[in-house]
Image (cartoon, rainbow, N blue to C red; front, side, top):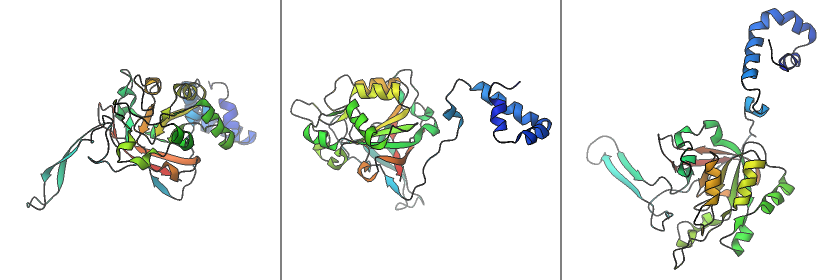
Length: 284
């Protein structure tokens, strides 16, 4: 027996006459369709539909080049060690290196497990969750006045008043202009007391995005989606604690419109990793 709504769904695509004439022949397909519907009837309708993304005419690289010149969160250079394994110069016929690098440096993904002991590791983030509608929140002006600025609920509502409600299955990215500070010490802004200074998300904004919007990922062009001076990392705790992922140290968000682009994140598929350097694009 079909669950409620199954027959109506079929009749939308067949005339009544065609429906009656094809009923016996189509019975296996109808039963199969109903079984799928029954198994997921409690999920939102959009979960059953393939994602729809706008056409694009150009690709914007949102990735910084990762090297030992890229500043690390601890204020020291990032660790990037390429050890030669094979070399054409010495007659091996191939060039190959062994990498040693930091998970959380350069343009990189934070998997939920980074902050959440029960969260998924990076290889378990579903591929469909790495291709999302991209919404860019411009906080350059308040961040210019206050380098410890945290994007507020009011900032988000002002964005929605201009560009419409956040679309479903979105990535919300903070554009502070901080990517232009790479690789200088200003990117972290560490003062003489060891305190970092850069913008991020306010915890109240993160809570709203979790509870009242369909947002899958957060992104920031700073070293963290929490602001620099934090000691308890509330944005990380809330967001990764909800089994969502985030992107840090994004580049070139100024080349992306506020709404309408698609983000594609090539997160590493390394078993057990808490995140990792990623190649990220915006399709505009």
